[in-house]
Length: 345
Ligand SMILES: NC(=O)c1ccc[n+]([C@@H]2O[C@H](COP(=O)([O-])OP(=O)(O)OC[C@H]3O[C@@H](n4cnc5c(N)ncnc54)[C@H](O)[C@@H]3O)[C@@H](O)[C@H]2O)c1
Picture 1 (cartoon, rainbow, N blue to C red):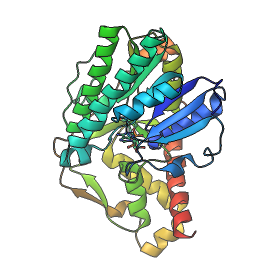
Picture 2 (picture 1 turned 30 degrees about the vertical axis):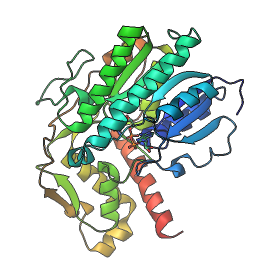
Picture 3 (picture 1 turned 90 degrees about the vertical axis):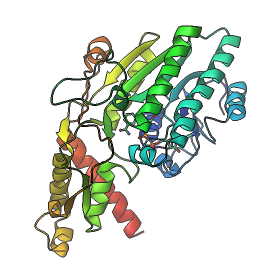
Picture 4 (picture 1 turned 45 degrees about the vertical axis):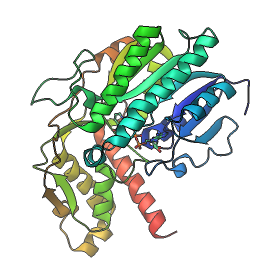
């Protein structure tokens, strides 16, 4: 490892957003050394980082953020200038099945990272300079009715074990800011979409089910509303927040793309109708939309999320670049290409 370059510890960098962020940072900041601490759970995939393995400015450490010995040893071995913390158990459905791992990774793991960073940065006298950036979700704020948006001041009201564990982690991060005057920031974004997301999540599921001519499951009446943020727009926002936000601040990051689940499913199906007409012909369906089926609703399913991200826009000059129509088309095409490369190696 090049010892001259400032080291950033990025956790969960083999997952969806983390891998896109590592690629973005690797390209944008060749002067950082990026240390990726990832447990490589079912959700972590080293193929998300293909091409970076040989880079002199990137290192993968396979390990658990809740492993105190490992995390402290990383701070001993490397002069870590900042932590950008993505690692989490991230799937709401799994948290409803069994939430213990969510507390272990999302709450305890975050605490272990905070303690190790605090201890190392305090010893070096840089506690107020070096930054701990917690990656969070708008789900910590709870659920909205037909109108309104979450602001940074909306009180936390998590309503499923995943969002409760993320809220718990955020509170721990805030407490380290208050108690020890540590330089922490929290960003809470809406639903991300783009390449490299695990197939269990909504958009990749819709694409893969359609390509396999299987029923496309949509929870309940499908009228739950989510706001969609293209992952590259999220990465640019994180770059700005990590480098420019004042210490102890919080920012919401939205996509400005509210849409009902049923409508995004239909939109993806029409894109597939367009880009895979030969497959559609084989299935003898009029449209992939005909595969959509409504299933029993998710327990405690939050109705609507939407964030007010005007603070980020005003203070740091961010705005999303990707429209949902173009981002969705690129994303669907990416999953189709992946599927075809696996189907015919
Ligand atoms: N995906 C979204 O739409 C979204 C929206 C808002 C916020 N977030 C937050 O962004 C972060 C990343 O989300 P994602 O969708 O990329 O998740 P993901 O599930 O795709 O990736 C999570 C990564 O964390 C790793 N990991 C899990 N437990 C670990 C542990 N104990 N130690 C080390 N590594 C571990 C996994 O191996 C995986 O690589 C999470 O904190 C999530 O809460 C996600």
